[in-house]
Length: 545
Image 1 (cartoon, helix red, strand yellow):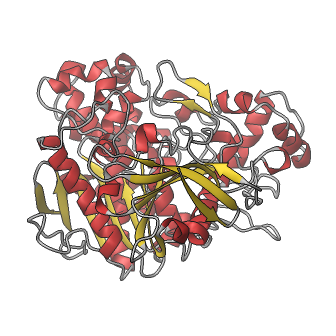
Image 2 (tube, one colour):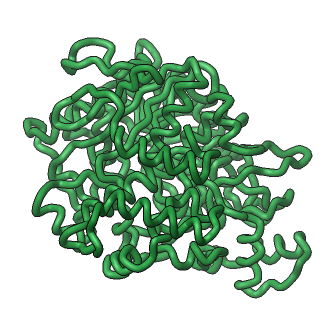
Image 3 (cartoon, helix red, strand yellow):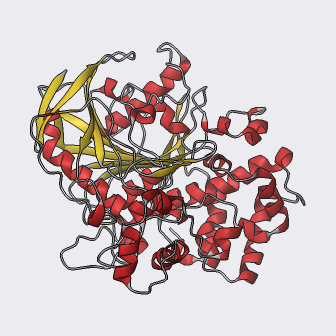
């Protein structure tokens, strides 16, 4: 056992042997804020009060209330008292304070945690960095917005800020450097990272950022008509009042499980379109006296003015992001039926809520023709790859590349771009979906989320990795790139990986293909990106890079 003093009291953690070579000290279940219960439900977190005596830090804190989207069937789990983080350090008293990497988990803002069954430290810590993983409020409890002082929105994102502030105050005690913090995340965690890059609450809390498969440009990152959705939720749960205080009191007294289990589509498109349904996410807040706003005004306009000065960024995506479309429970037969019968099925998510039906029909036909060419019918056996390419661009790649271009135009910050294409037995997410078996007959897909398996050990049925294997070589390459960036702001500061990853600029548009080999390139997905830019130029120019 090992003890450490933080601002709130004394923690007792443990020393852990690492099968991959470097032992470390583990401190789990550290409370970084007061439990968000009672009157604190939906509100910004309050600092944790001190405790007396020694607090055990050998087990994770509770996960936040959620529907676990990756269990079959999905199940409810978690507790409201969930604002905990975990710290893993290779050295409590290093000669020089170590770089710190804070990971923000994904899960569509509705699922996931920072627990080590998925995001353990064993791979990254080999490179002499400290890893911090966090829980934050999810779904209705983390992202409900009534546009009122009681329910202003973005509670889950404010939880993340509170965790970053805790790191600033305490990480020296674990051997970490508060002036060298890199935040990184995947999916909704990546989108969160991109939002921290423009939020006034997050300024000066980190030095670098890594965005893995999701940006604030993604259509699913902001709630559509958040207040209307909150009122609809109240009514469907039995509250008919039009008084905001009464609605808050009603929400405050509902069982968490009842809130989280209720789905609230508010448009016909949300009901009819077969896609991962994220109803509660980030919002632009109204300002109330005495409260901090995480986001204000038009988020895209704010981003176009620039991210936080001096912050270096890596941004990218996986080769087959669109496999997620099927992973989240979409019925494949229904998907292909809609693809055949309804042109609107092919309207990008960004555009669907703003375009009249006749123009949606016109646009959908254009997109279908681009992806299916002259094929009349969409069939799983024949067209799955083409549909996955469409989903990949729709949910992730267009928004990632648009973010990259805008950032390069408006910032002096050094930024990098990548495509992740590692293929091995650790590419597990497509295996969840039997209907993707026909892909495996031809190739191993690199699904949304598969990149995580190369940064974290993950105990989701995966065996330990042979350190002499080709797979471990890819793990070592990926973790070296990320930790080099955390240390130096340059993922390839020397020739140890045999390649130089050039920063991205509008003129050159450099990127790195991160696969079994590291391959530099120019302008990934260029032809598709030009097609999508033409679509947005004609139908929704506000979303053009």
